Length: 223
Ligand code: SAM
Image (cartoon, rainbow, N blue to C red):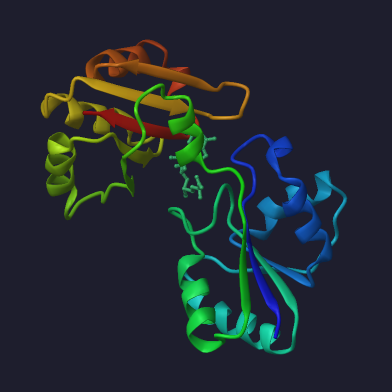
């Protein structure tokens, strides 16, 4: 029976790959990736050549069948998402669940590494002994309910947000009278910054410097 390695990859800075991740990518038989073009850049940087297969959110269950067939043949299969830890607001969970259900004897191992969630919390400078992670908020149905729950939370709430929607989210938080928010932007990249303030202060800053509304954001709502 083969091994499925779930490998975390950098969230921006390609230097953030772990030694164990590199060893695993070098020794596996095949890499299933959320987007083969993204992993190809990482592999080129470390001069690793491997057969690549796509396994994204749409094809996850279908491609899980291919992975299961390979594991039955004793192959070592890697799965990587585009950035960070697979399964964290990324594909991977259904692949793992399928393999666990169908091949209880297969080895499933985590090769841990970067995640925007833990990176942002590590520099937030707040008590993170307990927190709630909600990933991306729903765009429509359930959004208002989630926002009201966030406003009531007694522990920090961590969200992922895209540059297109960050202004809307800050306005919503302002109208819920949230008084303190930390936004970590472009972690591990050239324009990395962490801003703390009221939602309206951070919104005003983004309006004044629109070039800073680019990239990727982790939003931490401080109770
Ligand atoms: N699996 C990833 C992880 O472990 O962090 C998350 C994937 S999710 C599809 C992508 C979201 O993560 C982005 O929209 C952003 O909210 C957050 N993110 C990813 N990279 C980031 C970075 N370098 N800086 C800030 N946020 C980031």
